[in-house]
Length: 197
Image (cartoon, rainbow, N blue to C red):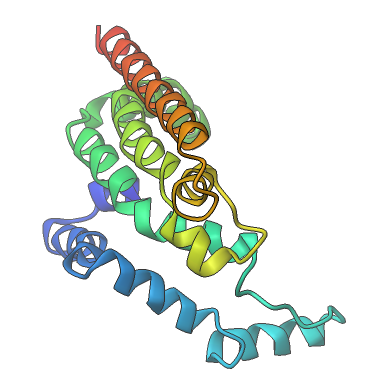
């Protein structure tokens, strides 16, 4: 998606960036509840998907309260945090490098892996840090969309504090999660600094 945005003409690029940023204009919980409606048992998406699965001989599926619902919503919520740093990085690439690689006989796949991918690594690291660290502690999405199967570390911490009243264990989990996130942020900074040299 970031590659498509970076390589589009200015008018299309502005519209695509607007579409990526658009989810930020609504509240996080509103977006999660929207996915609850989209993936609900009586939604058009569920009915059409189950009809198509029935044509293939597959039993109807329930999308709500499943790991699938959690993953879809987490990807939707965090997608802009990955796309925007990648887009900012890809937009700065010198296209003459790709032209030179093509002139030297590289096919599209080789041009991507030998030229574009190494140049885009700082954007990949920045996006990964911006996505992974907040996703570590998220608990609303698994609570609302995951049911009993969708527990994550954020849910476990919330459960220890609010339901089990085991504050020492909840505190330990919180500290471990914080140290893990700080370690990942430091590692991302080191890798980003090394790759930009």
